[in-house]
Length: 592
Figure 1 (spheres, rainbow, N blue to C red):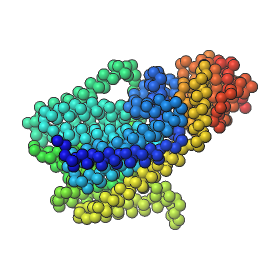
Figure 2: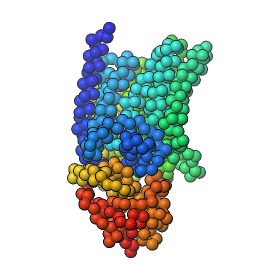
Figure 3: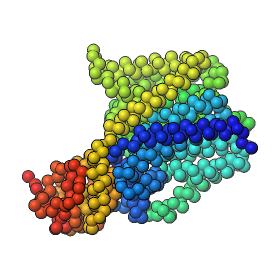
Figure 4: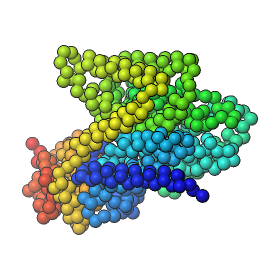
């Protein structure tokens, strides 16, 4: 029978979940538009095309994008009648998905055998993680956080299980990892880390090679079975979802060492330094009969973190921040690992560190501190990715206002102050003092970072209510029209595109005016759709079926020749005009 104590624990977590879902839902239910190109565009367009039974499409053209888990998760919201209501409902769904992360956090705490206070702390940190602010966005972090925590829970249960039962847990973990892979490819670091940990276990207990081989076969087999099944059915004939995993240029190779070191140093800081360094110093050999919570799990999590940092440096930093001394930090891919690392850290602090381990901890702290002062500078634009580093970025962004020195000097002073504070924190932790105060400070810091993220998202995503209502009304008008609609925004990946692509759900062809100019299609002032194959800046290829434009939706600033067009009766949001195009094969422009 389930004990009353267990029931009360789950009931308390359910209450936390309800409170978080309501609070984050309320904080995310303002009128907004997508802002992160091309990620959010893909999620929203794929969800709509799947609901309409048109397969995988982005900007009304076939797409190879196969990360369909988040689009599937927001499908229920798209069943509402108006797109304005749909966008609001997506915010509430996001809040529910993110708030559900408290359940795997509680399950992890129980599996780690944490006492009630530590369990409450772990669930509390999960409830106020900065990435919870993603509920107001259209990003897949809303499901990546809870699913990542469940993934760690599955692997922990596999570590703790007997050899035969471990095979079953590994098979379940492999299938679940494919589900997570349908959300983000970075989820593969769980598979790689698991195989490396099992190799480490086998090295210390070679007699158990059959059991290790069986569990790895079950894990990889279930993952590959799901992968192959999807490739020959749902994703038959499709290529790769991303174009940022290819080989590097010579210039990028030279920048890679700096990217790796800088990203690693900032990641350690984002994780409050000691939830990374203490488990590293407290690693134990996985002898037969040893507790996997203290021998295997710490190494597994550290490997996941290291592989994740390397993937970010390889696939993002060297490609998007080449030669930037202050590359952006993408903590949202790694933040779920903080929760299990905190649990491991609390267990590590229960053990008396030997003098050798204390010296190792001091050396690692000094090495990180020197590296952070010398190598790092600040964080580049893209504050929405910083999450756990909001506190650092908040101060760093304001150092240019300080008198008596350059910003470079004040940034160096800020980094030195941080390193000194970390040294004091380490001394307090090793002496087992002030743990409740530190726990409270961690919760306050997470909440402050959440507020910083929410403020940034509000500034980035929020739009006037009348703009949302107007764009939603335009969508209803367009849905009643026959023929093809050509949307001409002014600016690439700008506000003109964001509003329409958020609230217009019908098939619309989009080609930016700047893209038309660069392609040379307007050399004579006429876009001849029978002779010119045109398309948007993203995905970067031309439409194959755009041979006529019966309707033209033009943003202010696009110099269409209105003498050849007829203004439609549809009500448009401010800044847009819908025209009927009598000569559907051609769109004329006023060229100065």
